[in-house]
Length: 75
Image 1 (spheres, rainbow, N blue to C red):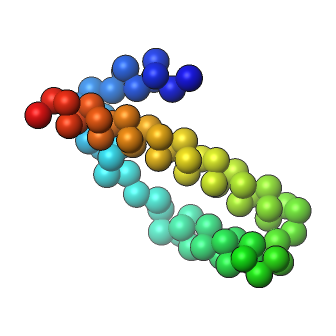
Image 2: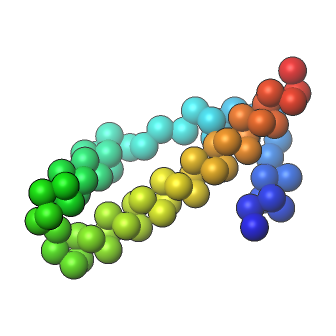
């Protein structure tokens, strides 16, 4: 499903994607939600928020893997 998108990567875009970092404030929020999840204290709203971040993180990780493959093949 993501292959058409990854074919649009230039080497510059791939490099930027590989080095993409989460905003520190957002990472703090994700960490808070993760701690609450571990403790079993998430509200339904927080669980939904946390799951959304998890899905987005998985998507970004897949795109980063595709970007790394492109960069490795270009060397």
